[in-house]
Image (cartoon, rainbow over all chains, first blue to last red):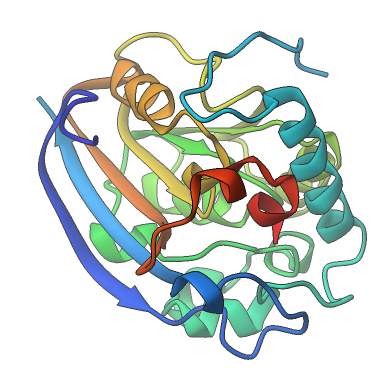
Length: 43
Length: 207
């Protein structure tokens, strides 16, 4: 999807549990939701 | 307030209703960031996602307290003096203000957000900091109020997941970037597929 939008060199650099221990329960755990960082460059 | 626009959605969800729910959620964060949400906020979150303490020096508490991102766009590359930056979904302004300091007086930062309460908070924080190279504009990520080819870098943090039309939002990010411009994004991923019916549940989008 990122490359289809006009980017190249797409790379996910980091994944982490960013919702664990949040004050309110969420749907994050049910879907294995994680925080990520990604980068790309416009073609 | 930004004009409501008909945005085609590849997911069968009412975009206007979804936007209203998201606005309400983030207006609550702007109003009382420490009241407890389904995500972490503020200083605790900056530590979770790895913000360097030096980036936060001089950033007003008004902006830091309402931080609600899911990643760290600055870990993906340092912004250079003089660069132009667009912060998509700028919230209370923390990332825009960090970016403004990185690019310096010769650079420019435009933060875009659809929640008036967050825009108020971000503008207040910019005033407190005396930041002159940053401005906050009301708008949607699917129709960014930024000219074609204006930016060297687009950053965003915990926002792309909130649109049902991610292709359109990414296309807008590409449109406002110069050729070879950089995209540096914090967002979320999921390990388990979301059932089609669940994608229409507004509560799942906001919580």
